[in-house]
Length: 204
Image 1: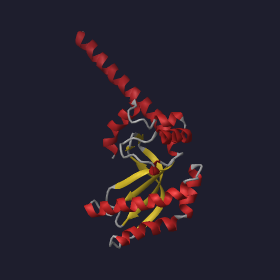
Image 2: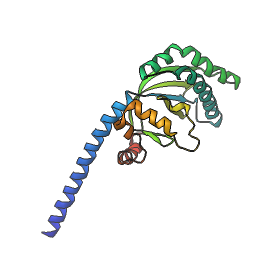
Image 3: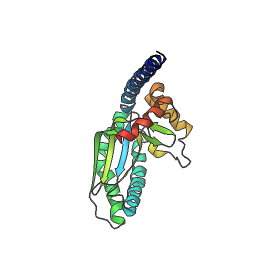
Image 4: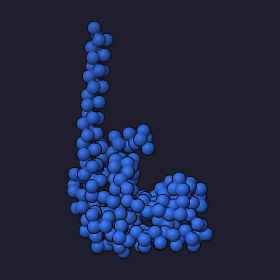
């Protein structure tokens, strides 16, 4: 009788745990979708994971980010930023190609906007939950290497996170753009993110 009671308690505990996880997952997904509608991510994918290709990726990234910082400095919303990127695609890719040629490579490059699924990513002390996001992608050569990423709008790409922390004024701007509830989803230490980090290894 005592064993049966323990089994029932264990089953109820498991069911409660699963129910809480489902509720939490649905809440995070809803917030992620709202968050994603306010962001443009930027990804540069290297030709391969060789040391040389990864170094080239970072050089391309530095040049393109510097070029786009001037283009996007006065952008007031995500749609305007997307339009600016599209209108200046030739100049962006020419900037990337110049770096590639200066380093002695003849890789092709492509640039495009895409809706893609991304796993949990952390930028300094700001994190983005897994889900579908709009991203501006630059692919170098075969694009088989690891990618570098940041957020173009709001402009996280253009801040210094040398010490692993996004400046407070940038966090405040991010909060103003995406809203307080969605901003809460970017807290790397929140209960939601502890849950998502656990799930991330299964989806990445």
